[in-house]
Image (cartoon, rainbow, N blue to C red; front, side, top):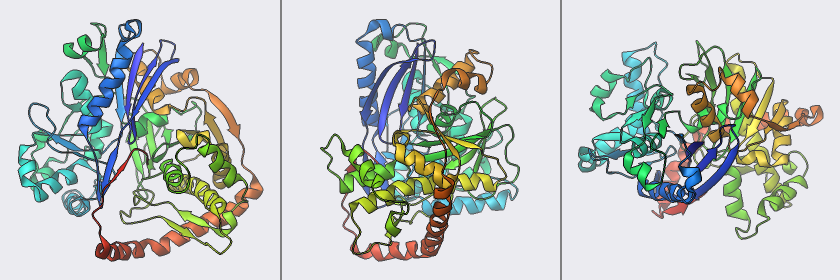
Length: 505
């Protein structure tokens, strides 16, 4: 049996697969984010408590826990915190959408360009180094106590093995490239390279700590295997094995990537071209700041949280309004945006409201916005001369038939709905099985383990209408880009310093 731990932005899951790749157990716990102004934080104490709650649940069946042979994990990337030499957390977790380190990111990016003009390295504010530098400049006392900077993936690696390490794809978020961190840049900003996680190859296996095996009744032979972060695993876990299928995974954020035999030599825009471990495959695409989380926000803001049929009601309301939501367009940038454009200060906008606008029009506009953000990422991929024939969809948004149809119509691509919505855990399983030589290729594993539940074809007539709406959506946002910064300045006069606890985005 194989245990996958998936620590995302809003929950932690434990999923067990048998030797045939069938899911036989699943349990999850919500994790909470605390928001105040630019600060978005989580707490590793909560991570640990929720993880151990799941492991204790598994251990109630010794038949299951004692037959788990391998454990791996996959997590959100760019969620950074510091620990001391004994592994104790010194800071809270600065989440991927935390914007405190924007100035530090710009400074590091400038240094990178000066030192190596040919490098493809970028430094978003979500990266490890600007966040560490932010602490150095804003809380020296805390910074001085940190012996290692960790991410969510390293948290789980350390929990199960007692070792501090990461994989190359996760490390790339800390600007790891060509088997090395940018040591010269790191030293120039005053960060000690020894505080960064050691980088190991995907497929590395280590023994699980004796204390963990004993506490949760795992087999003495259980091994922990290194895979990679959730956006990558989710693509692998929703890939149908067919060439030119892009994978749209919409959980809290939307990730749209395609597996390719070749990487990009020249990149246009904020696209990523990442080699997948030791395999001759590259993942090309990007993730935004909010995808499926758009629907969660809308539900919390406009619908009853106590209604068990809330999603059905939302979809029905949206279904009753025709294409274009009677002229309302929603820009869903509640947490800023990182791809296909970068604007940490972008915010959500309902445009085109009139006296007759109702909740149903708003619902339709929000549903359509989820397709617009996916199409925006798709066009980024296509603009880099990558062919896309169809799109597989997974994650929470894939449960909405209406959203799947809208995505087909907006993108003018065939949509394939993956049967198992837990694509992130399935992808981690595939990488685990590949490292164990159970399959010879990703394509072979995908065709054996991933099933397509439904195929949705686009409507040419609807696509013609949506093309105009999408073009206007882009035009509207382009006009607003410089105004987002003005709006941030305006808001500084009305700061309330009120914090918000959220369990869903």
